[in-house]
Length: 451
Image (cartoon, rainbow, N blue to C red; front, top):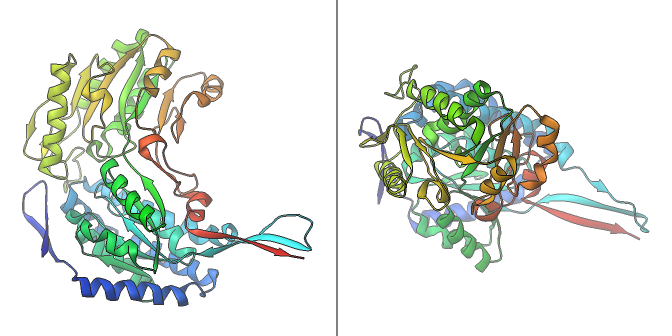
């Protein structure tokens, strides 16, 4: 079987990738296990330097890798470059901090000596999505490999070109054979992979459906799992907020990557006394964004990654309007391109409120006051992150406990940072990536007790 990646803007073929056979997969799984036995014994200082090399490889080849991202999934080229640079950052972060994170944790007990040591667990399977095809992989791989594990990547089939380049990064950086392997496979091979003794865990970033399926398989084989799934983040604006500043933040929070982000702001919950002003200024800002060929430097809005994704978004918009939402801007679709769209007077029960909208759609929701805004925010099955815009910083901090999500940002869009743990609650998944927490997900915290 062959997989074809297609440029969503031009419709032209971006690459053809031949699927691995079951025999090839079996050999790769055995290699992952064999490589682990030697890789785990490489001193942490050497593993860290190799990860630093990977960061430099990324910087040295930014244009090549960024172009592949844009060709395969349509991200504006300026954003693709930023994605590569962020990957280099996370490589540097773990190169700098892994030794400290993995050092023995001394715990005083009645023993002569007692401590926790941190050992790698084996091979970890990464099942990754297309929307940030390099970043999602590197935020997993940097801590996982530096901790002494090996990794296998099952990427989304429309970005297999990116997946091959990622494997090439680690080869160029000097990582031993088998430490990081790219799988060209259909998702129906997941069971075979997780069943193998060499594979001890899985990290998945993707949809609720994909997460549920992989979690069931990993549970069947008693293998560790980490899930980073969808989101419907609320962007709350209080009555005392600097509206111009809030609009500027909101524009990036919703439109980065053409809105194709799990942590994008999707539900804009506005206290009623500033609702009209915010909606007017936000809609005006959205209308001025430049759409076009994502390879052009000036393009701010490109196509969605596939036509079915644009179709799904358009259907959600149509349903929401039928349910009473007001179309304030956009609403039209041409093949993979969907106009940036703003819906007003969105209420609980409407599709744009209840479902994750993966694309350039902003749902405007009116709240009576701050308490009502938090109530509306919590009326969601998702739990990735919340933004609150206000001039009363201390009050916003004091109310962080009202939010059940995995992140709470004040006067800033929800974003991932190598220095901070990242992950969700409810159907947005479980486990944490990045920071020390991300490294601890795939290590054996082993108690050592000496009498």
